[in-house]
Amino acid sequence: MIDALVDLKQDFPILSRQINGHRLVYLDSAATSQKPQTVIDSEIDFYTRHNANVLRSVHTLAEEATTLYADARQTVARFIQARRPEEVVFTRGTTESLNLVARGWGDKFLTAGDEIVVSPMEHHSNLIPWQQVALRTGAQLKFIELTADGQITSQAAQEVIGPHTRIVALSAISNVLGTINPISEIAVMAHAVGAIMVVDGAQSVPHQPTDVTTLGADFLAFSGHKMCGPTGIGVLWGKLPLLEACDPVTYGGEMIAYVDRDHATWAEVPEKFEGGTPNIAGAVGLAAAMRYLADVGMQRIYQHSISLGEEAFRRLNHMEGVQVYGPSHPRSGLVAFNIDQVHPHDVAQVFDAQGVAIRAGHHCAQPLMQWLGVGSTARASFYFYNTDEDLDALVDAILETKRYFRR
Ligand code: 7TS
Image 1 (cartoon, rainbow, N blue to C red):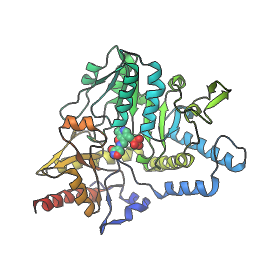
Image 2 (spheres, rainbow, N blue to C red):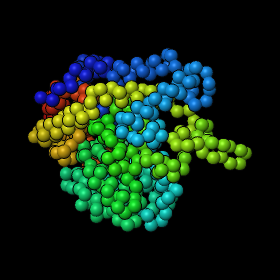
Image 3 (cartoon, protein in one colour):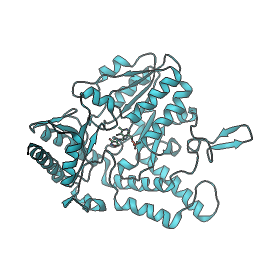
Image 4 (cartoon, rainbow, N blue to C red):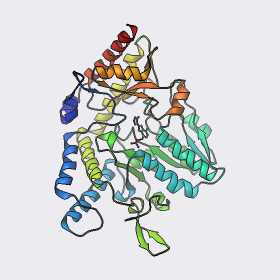
């Protein structure tokens, strides 16, 4: 039984909705997670009682808002075990965080002949910024080849990481295969050749305990909305000397030290990267989400994700006419699949008629679709509020889809 966290469903008002006459079975948390009442309340409370801009005015509301924003940064730092809150840069999400590193570090330090190592399982957010910086600087992209079941081995990484490698950029957990990558081991290889390790934590930070002091990353990018927080807020964590070495990429208000008619100098990290009015309520909501997740327990959440992911893989893998992708073990809490002769969008539509929400498409990972030899897949993705019952609903929806298209 995988229903240890069943009571937590009650914390998420949306999960009591009926969809097309059925109980909502939300299996699309890799796209975005649902939000517990405490996170919704924290945003309402911010706008109801404390709203003002940060870091500029001296009135009471402005000071309250500035304090709440600074407290949110502290909460994020604690959640990922960062040594100092200054290492936490607020962004719009993983995509913006990775673009910031590619622009701020890549444009400044890469030159022709340098190599950027990625893998074929990367989300477009952790591929296109590197393609573009390669075009601008003359650096080259190199790919770590995957095993037949979609894993990255240390040996395969070792074959590609070499004396010209300056950046290794990998997702910690794949949003399609569910693969859990050996980040710490690969970081050792990257550092041995003087490269930096950039980690796309969009699917890992919501699902497993994160300790940036042992992860091996130099930069870690993640999104608030996939971990019970609001949309439009995310984080770039970086080692302080590296953040200090990066150029800012967004110029304007609140990111400067001094400006005259022709020149400007930059504020300290992290303000240097946060030009313009930030998403203050979003940061407050993300902090509330992190406090909630910490109360549930990230180790518990991780175990639950793995149990659901592995059990889903096992059950779907036994179904006739169903193709599942990625490793059987270890795997995180999602499963991409196809049903013979049925387009994934049709699968998602039949599922929706039964109240089951999944995603279909290329999952912003077209090179991975090419590697799998498919145009698209269906994908069910779980979070700690999903239960055994939801897994049964997934299996039932597949059976119903097969019946529907046989008719
Ligand atoms: N990296 C990975 C591994 C992701 O899964 C995603 C989003 C991103 C980066 C981008 O995150 P964003 O918050 O900046 O958009 N993944 C998905 C998904 O799998 N389905 O919808 C979004």
